[in-house]
Length: 170
Length: 359
Image (cartoon, rainbow over all chains, first blue to last red; front, top):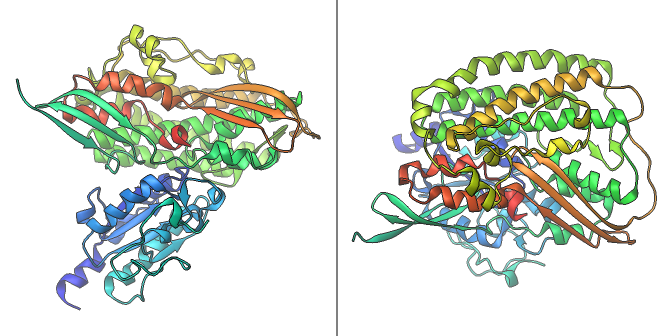
């Protein structure tokens, strides 16, 4: 590995985006960054700017309006990039699966590398998930997961599925 | 006349943990108008609640908001209890009070950390969240979970606490209070925090009344209003006065919340002393009919649940009125005329909870 790719794995910057769950996982992401759990000891820094970020932590079931923002943010991140879906809502929609305003699962909208289950996911699990996402930055991971059953259009690397009410699997 | 520009503040912004957009119309550095754009977190919980039965809805209501999850479950359970015509046993009412105050403590500490971060005071943010973890440990000691604790049930509380839990809670409360004593003077007196908050986002008592402000926003403008005085759970047996400040700015709102954390510790201690023995869960049967309203004081203000039933298995209609929605008109008023650099602190000062508001 070259110098830049080595450095990237040693100090990845994360960005957190909440797409419409109960907030429980969002505050656990903050808790993971603060002194008791201290995600920053891995050289990880929280940033608000997608153009500086290497790993995106997504919490929550994806409401249609937030899904468009999520897709924009994903496109603004420079590669190589990793996405960690946190909480059962981000995995499958969880308790909100039958709600009318959401795509059940982040992988319906953008490719996902690591899934962290839990309601709410504990900070220890979030740290483990973030560390697993480093494989993607090191170039050791396989292709990211995209939801099955979606139309083939837009499923290639770097492109994502159009999010619209008629396109979800309900 | 200088030209006007529109700056979109959010939906993804470092000071907001949740997506909220404020479209700010600027004239140079001054905010002329602010238009909040909601709907990023809307899931449709009220509609989903109509398809689940009363006991299942407790878990759904907890997930309206992860920060004040216990309050939502409490308010929902109270409204169903009044619909059924039953009451929680005395011990359960005290347990509910203790958990509600623990929730208020952690919510206020979460906010204090965020406002320190918005002021640019990184180490204070970290210290506030270190203290919050001690409160989370208390919450975990009594319920076994950190965020959505699922201890409230229709007719009381799900599980009783033994003496070991109560002793552990009493012991940990001393540690929490000691750590709070260490950090509170920084919020009260630090020149950096004061420079960012004093005089920022002023809303007078009259304006706050007209715009329907609730909770700490109203109390920081001198309005004596606290739903806990209704005497739900065990609050009628505890001794407390609403915390009121009169300087109407972001600093006052911070001080109200800071003083409420000490009040919460005091209330938990009182409740632990007066807690009676006995049952914690009243059994109930059947399907209720009619309509009921319940109000509780959330960390952010007044929360109201309206429930209507036609005797079926599921509620016919469930309506939630959350405090942040009442405070957004006040936020728009506060932002007008402020500088762009003050917008993060002012926008945080109402302690907006978007996942409650949009559901």
